[in-house]
Structures are given as C-alpha cells and as structure tokens.
Length: 88
Image 1 (tube, rainbow, N blue to C red):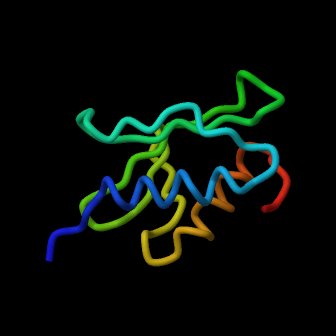
Image 2: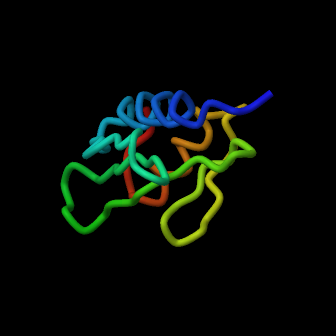
C-alpha cells in the first residue's frame, strides 16, 4: 500500500500547530516534494521545512529524521524541541 504523504504532512502540520510557540507558515502539498514550513512564533530565524518520505519518515531540510507517520505527535514534538518551543 502506498503512503499518502500529503495526508501525513497535514497531520504533521496539525500536531506542530498545537505547540504554543510554533506557527505553520505554509503547507505546500502540490509542490515536488510536498512540504510543511514551521517556525517559532517569536523568531523569524528559528524555522524549518519538513517533508515526508515514501516510507513515512518526517525529514528536515538538513536531513534530520524527526520520526515517522506512525507517531506523528512525537515527530512534531521533536521539531518543537529543535525550534525551542514550549510543549503542546
């Protein structure tokens, strides 16, 4: 069965948006590759772009593996930690 990466990114964006200090800047599902951009609300420089691999892994723009689609909440929490955000 093929993984729906767009749905995975939508779920990731929702979980990331639950963190008080994070803000989803954009969700580009029709781009190649599809991605979500998230930033710390209080810093224009603390931002990251995340994609979802065909295997269901969330990957940052610099190649860091945040987690998998099986545990999207933990993957979003890891990004929040990297962007110095408060827990959800």
